[in-house]
Length: 240
Image (tube, rainbow, N blue to C red; front, side):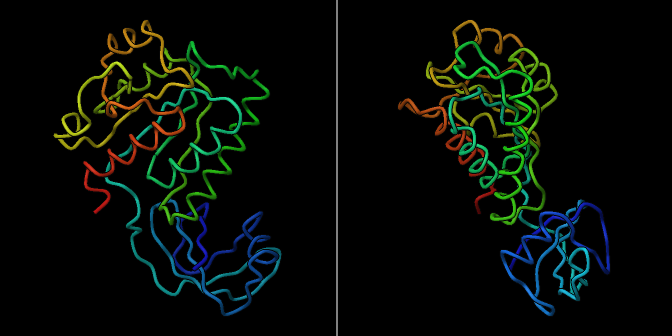
């Protein structure tokens, strides 16, 4: 069943507008009487039937229930800015795996260093990718792609989470040991191509971030966040 997100809470009827309405009309070619799912901001999953087409798509609620697809743990990914289209892939797969928020982060070894105008356009594109991935994976909300932060800004933001982890090829604690107390909020730091400078790791550790390992193999910048998210979802019971 087609899956969409509403921009307000509702209980009976709703009009789908904008790009989603065009997608329903032109791409899916749906007709009156066909069913689709709408998820409202409060996390309610509504099974709806199309009643008609005006400027938008008019739907009526058939049944509603709480959406069960959101993880019990909220994970913020601070991803070192990668080159090319690797961030597109990271955003898409991270959303599928259950990330709550993605924060592009500028580190010393980042090859990509876009100006303010360019990063704004990139973030807008990544947000659209996040929306598509959230719809495809039947999420209860669309994870937000935040504006670019420096590593120091990211560390300040992460200190409010229950657990903050930096993954580093130099080794560290296991993910299982860091999640044994069932934290509700987790921040993870992943480097760009080439990883982190040693001085950056020392800075993060000084701010309360714990270094952890993803095993003995060296993972690419686009592989590491997906491995980390998979492990976090597994050890918090969100892959049962």
